[in-house]
Image (cartoon, rainbow, N blue to C red; front, side, top):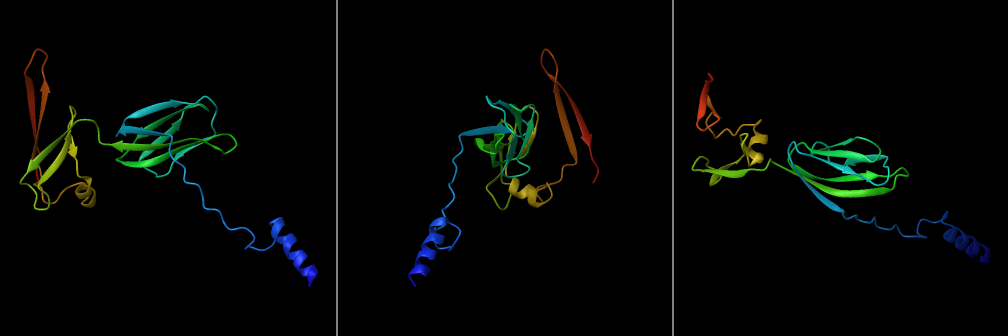
Length: 175
């Protein structure tokens, strides 16, 4: 009986024996070192002091990582959202961890009141280039178009003229 106790003790301390010898340790939650904020279509290039082996994101489709060399890479915003971004060294160790936040392009919010039965207003982000829907939940669920809004039949484009004023072109689309 004493031999059995000695054998069980040896197996427990060697780590090859019983599963109850050591409880499973909980994984460590890693905190990001930085926060990178990008607009859709915007890019940032990062240069590391040491070479890296692999870089990627936790979620596909929000940000794109393109290595330029073993020390330089570019992070580009693809669509609105948030993801983690990691860089691993040659031995597989974690060299860098950041949160990437991609938002619509810089501009200002335009609110149109009285056009929706669900919300008080319909929001658009507008910049020098144009406007896009601010509340993507409606547009993504309906194939890119809010069914409660009227369908545009014509589009007017204004182009500034040097010295002041503008030219205006209207394109009419049939149903």
